[in-house]
Image (tube, rainbow, N blue to C red; front, side, top):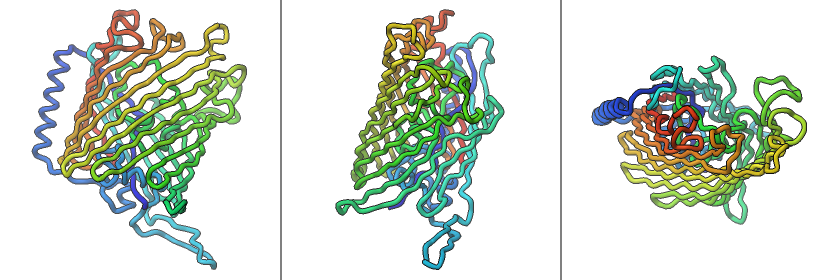
Length: 458
């Protein structure tokens, strides 16, 4: 069965700056929530039709509980290569009646725009208090069928921080079916530029919660390599399969393909350049019940990289992740739970060549739960935790990567392709410490962030 995934817009997000007293922050939040609640009571819920929906003739809600979260139908649509269509195509064959051309009668083009406002609890010295970004992100997509068995999700994004346009998340697929032991095997190939962007679950770095976030808060200094370090800077080719709607597998191999550099790459160009190829693997078990769905899986990547130059010793990273996803559907309500844990083993022979200790560990844990009602109102609660060995590479005051906190988000979708969000992030520990984490008497809680987002796809 071929199926549909309306596009997973992105986790790549710019942001916005702000600060003031905690009291004013809370009053602003209450004021915005009141307005949002009034809107929910007075607006009827309709649906929009970006390019995947136009190609299939189906509502966005067939694939999403709330974009970019995919349901079972959306996951199958993506695994089938984005090729399901219900619109006229331009076909051509040869004398042997083999179809040599199958083009959609209209190009599957979509756009996405984000605009946002952010405020952190305590002003960072030398920064503006309360930033607006319009746009925070602006993207153009080719998302749909190329031929009967080949489809693509290609994103070009305007980055307001640099004023430039570049290639963003891209996934090009071939998919087909074959019978094995009287069971269906969906198999295919994926060519992509970001490890985990080809995945179909919302537990993995490219697609996990939060789907959008503020750029005003100082970024955490420690993160696993698989969590975005290679995004847009590699090319990967892999094979995948789904056997009997139960067992999923994928094996891919990545090679550095950095943007903005001359080819061939010189010894002094680029950072985190992969030595040879980096294998990526993914295995998952899933089952669809009458009203619920469950998946448990594992994934990982093994990478030898040159930290700065393309010569000498390399650093080796092994990322191993475990994840689960649960969904429950009622007539007027859908709920979901996502959780993931990543352990990264680091052997930094290049970075710490002069040290007796070159082996370190880094852990990342995330969990979130969401509920969405049929009127378009929903909320999400999440928790994140980073921990690991002391390592001066992170650049934190005490050398530790430890950070953790909670996220609270309220969403309203007056139409299926339009989302308004209010998010609040609370930090218990930031870059290793709860108090004075930067040596300038700044505490973790002073980075607590209010983030308001308008996200439209059309």
